[in-house]
Image (tube, rainbow, N blue to C red; front, top):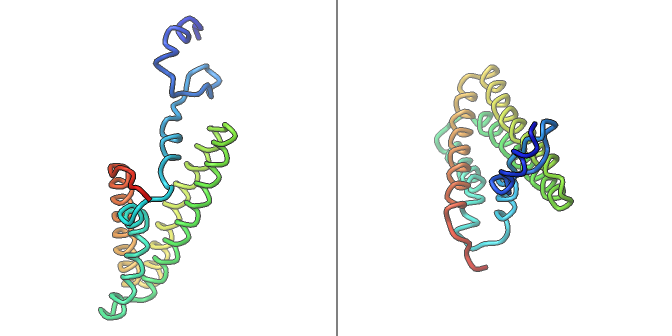
Length: 165
C-alpha cells in the first residue's frame, strides 16, 4: 500500500487503529464510545439499564395468573439471566483490555459475547419448543419482549443526557 496515501489522510482516520496487516485502519470509535456508558446515573438511567430485568420479574406473576407454561418462563428467564451475565463479563474484559490499550482484544470479547448471547437465547427457545410446543411459544414471546425492551432501553440511554448522581 502506498504510504503517502496513509500520511495524507491520517487526520481522516484519527479514530482508527493500525490493526490490519494491509496497513488499513480499523475504526475503534464505537468501542471507546461504550466506555462512557454504564457508570452511575439517576433513576431514569437505572430504569433504562435494568428495565428488562424488571420486566422479567414482573412477567412471573403474569405467567402464573394467566396459566401460561412456567417451563417457558423458566427457560427464557434462565437464558436471559445467563446472557446478561455473559454481557457483564465481556464488558469487564473489554474495559480491562481498553485500559491496557488492547483494542483488538476488547472488540473480540464484545463480538464473541454478542454472538454467543444471541445463540444462547435462540437455542434455549428452540430446545424448549421442541420439547413442549406451548412452552416454546411462551419462551419465544417472553424473549422477544425482553430483547425489545433491552434494545429500546440501550437506545434511549444513549439519547438521554447524563444525569447528576
